[in-house]
Image 1 (tube, rainbow, N blue to C red):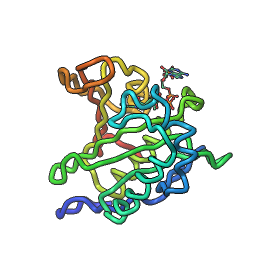
Image 2: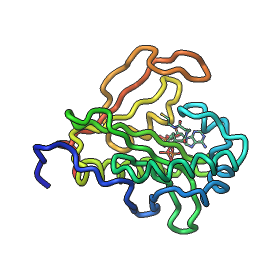
Image 3: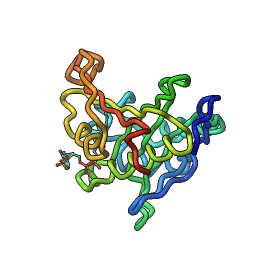
Length: 191
Ligand SMILES: CC(C)(COP(=O)(O)OP(=O)(O)OC[C@H]1O[C@@H](n2cnc3c(N)ncnc32)[C@H](O)[C@@H]1OP(=O)(O)O)[C@@H](O)C(=O)NCCC(=O)NCCS
């Protein structure tokens, strides 16, 4: 698809599929599964920008608020579901870091029972494909706290290139931590 001189072509959170996963919008009906599978888990939340939820009801309220955000075409927030069982196992979020420079940034989390199966690299690749081919980003980036090596592995396995370190850019449960930045460029990406 040719570059648009007018910038990005926002699509909103449209469904995406991969070999083993499907990605779709979350609804308030997903609150119980999301709470049980990862949103209440401190080990999942500790590197995220949110605190672990204490009740499914709290999460249901949040998901209700997000329905309005989904009407905004610039909002990209997918639930990650296993094709085989229809189970909600994680989320992946894409936001526009720079509209003019066409930069997208991704963050993600997965329920602990499903760690180590390569699901997140698979979801990340699908989101980057959508970001480059449909939205028109020129660069998609992701970063992780120095201590979160497993997230760095996701970026490496998805084929992203290490850009460098921003000193004490993150605050995690360990305190201020250096942040490791990775990126993919449109010209490098093979759909
Ligand atoms: C980071 C995360 C999304 C990885 O997803 P995933 O689908 O398990 O990714 P992978 O299967 O490719 O595994 C990535 C690495 O995690 C580590 N890992 C795998 N299984 C693990 C387990 N059960 N326990 C701890 N680490 C594990 C391994 O280092 C693996 O790398 P390897 O395949 O080279 O051995 C997931 O661990 C997670 O949600 N963590 C908490 C939230 C978070 O940190 N989000 C990112 C914020 S920057």
